[in-house]
Image (cartoon, rainbow, N blue to C red):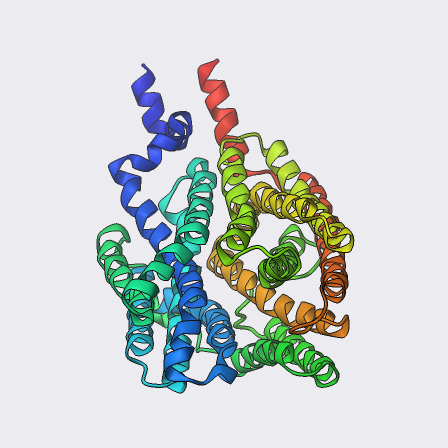
Length: 492
C-alpha cells in the first residue's frame, strides 16, 4: 500500500531520500547543468583575478586593470535585470543557450585580445551573458525540482563557490605559469560549450510566450547600469570626487527604482524593497549582506599580506575560510525541514555576519590575525545559515507571475551589493589613510574603520532578518510545511 501513496506525494518521496535524490536520473542532469551555470561566473571571477596581472604585463594598460572587474560586474547586473524578460520571450532553454553563446564569444575575445580595450570588450560580453545565465538558473530551481529538494540544490551551489574559491586560483595560477595567461582566460570556453550541451538535454523545451513578453526597458536599464558603473568608478578616484560620484550613483539607482515601481511593465517583482512585506524586506537582505561582505573580499587578503607578511597562497587560503564555512554550513542547513527552524536560520545568518565583521574590526585594531580569520569563518557561517533558506523563502512568497522576476533578482542583487560595497568601502578606506606603501599601523587603522562601517551594514541586515522572519510567521506559511504535514498524516 505504500507505493501508491508515494506516487501521490512525489515531494514526500524525494524528501525521505535526502541528498541521494539529486543523483537520480530525473534530477542529476538539472543539478549538474544549473551548478555549471553558477560555476561559469565563479571560475571566471577567480581565473581573471589570478591571471590578469600577467595579461597586463604583456598587453599593457595597467591603468585599466580595475575595469576588467568593474565592467564584468555591471553587465552581470544588466544581464540579470533582463533575464526574466528573455526567459518569457524565448523560453528558458533558448535564452540560456543564447546567453552562453554570448559568454563564449566574450571568452574568445579575452583569449585573443591584442590589447586591453579588446579584453575589456570581452569582459562586457562575458558579464552580460553570465548575468542572464545565473538569473535563469536560479529561476529554474523551483521549476525543475520539488520544494523538498530546493534547499539541497542551494547547498550544492554553495559547494560550487567553495570549490571555485579554492581551486580557481590554483588552476588559473598553474595554467598561467606553465602555459600562458591566455590559457587561463580561455578555460571558460570549453566550460560554456559543455553547459550548452547539458542545457539541450536537461532543460525542457517550451515556456516561451513572445506575445506576453514586455519590451526591454532600456531607459531603466541605462539608469540602473549607469548608477552601478558610476559607483564602481568612485572606488578609483580621490575621496572628494568619489563622494560626489556615489551621490550621483544613488540618485540614478533611486530614479530607476521609482520608474520601475510606477511602470505597468516592471523589471522588479511587485513590492520589491518595501519593508511592509516579507519579500521587500528579504530583498534588502539579499542586497546588504553581499554589500557588507565586499569589505572582506576587497581588503582581507591585502591586509594579511601587508600587515602580517603572509604570502599570496597563505593569505588566499585564509580568506577562503569564508567560502568553506559557507559551504559546510549550507549543506547542514539544507537538511533542516521544519519551517520554523528555517526562519530562525534566516534571522541568525546576518547576526553571524555582523559578529564576523566586528571580530575582524577588533583583529585589525589590535593586530591579532586570529580574530580576522575567525571573523572570516563567522561571516561564512552567516551566509551558509541564511542564503539558501532566504532565497527559497523569497521564491515561495512570490506570486506565480512574479517568481521569475524574484528569482532573477537574487544573483543580480548579490552582484550589485558587491559592486556598490566595493565602492563605498574603498572610499571609507581611502578617507582613513589607506594607500600603497603606508605604515602597518596606518593600514591597520584604515582597515579597522572600513570593517567597522561594514559591521554597521551587516547589523542593519540583521535587523531586517528579524523583521523578515517575524513577518513570515504572521503572513505566510512555508509550502514545505504542507508537504511535511501531509507526510506525517499519511504515516499516522
